[in-house]
Image 1: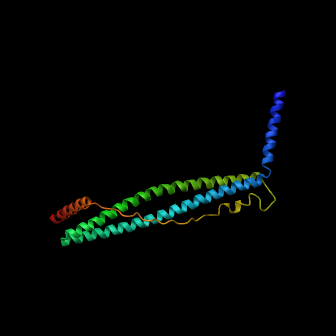
Image 2: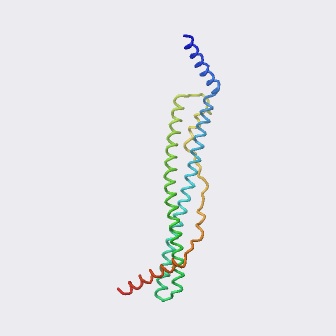
Length: 197
């Protein structure tokens, strides 16, 4: 009997201690909701920056494809005129653009996956925040207009557009003499086969 009484007293003491610490639960709840919203805004900003970078990379990829197409036209002209030296230089440019294009394609693939993951995180956290606000409004009512739950009016409308980051470029894509020589052989063989038919 004495043990159960002590346990009850300890339990009540713990509950009272917790209540003493949480003197203003609506203020604490308002702060928790605000922190969740700030974290969600940060994630939205990160997603916006990732999407902006992805858009820049895709534009860059299209530009590289156009450059490769132009170089291929130049190479056909070199073959037609029989200028081997100029053809080799043109092949060097073509291989450099192709290497650059592969790097950009890999970055686009990785960033697309990252954007999908970040979008999923934002959606999950948005749903969690909406659920918490809904429960908080249901269980706690205050007369004060500026209560913890007046935050709910603007909680879902705020967005952080984030500063767009542009793609800085991939630097120099060096091409070796061996790569140029191999491509020159391929081009010559393709030209010979095309001329035979």
